[in-house]
Length: 82
Ligand SMILES: [Zn+2]
Image (cartoon, rainbow, N blue to C red; front, side):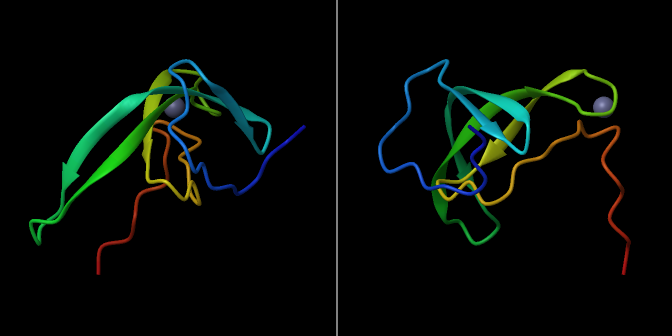
């Protein structure tokens, strides 16, 4: 069963596998992230494989899981500089 957007209300167990748009993500733990305003929050690391080159990489994500990277940094389209 494919899950698209979902909200994990409790902490998933390490190694928990979710599938998003046909891509598997394995829960690899949490880490604290502090943004430029000094606000810290806990993000989750999801291990997955790049869709393009199949290299393993970690996709950090917040609790909402609204956006997960599907490609490693190398294969990701570059953001346009403004
Ligand atoms: Zn790649």
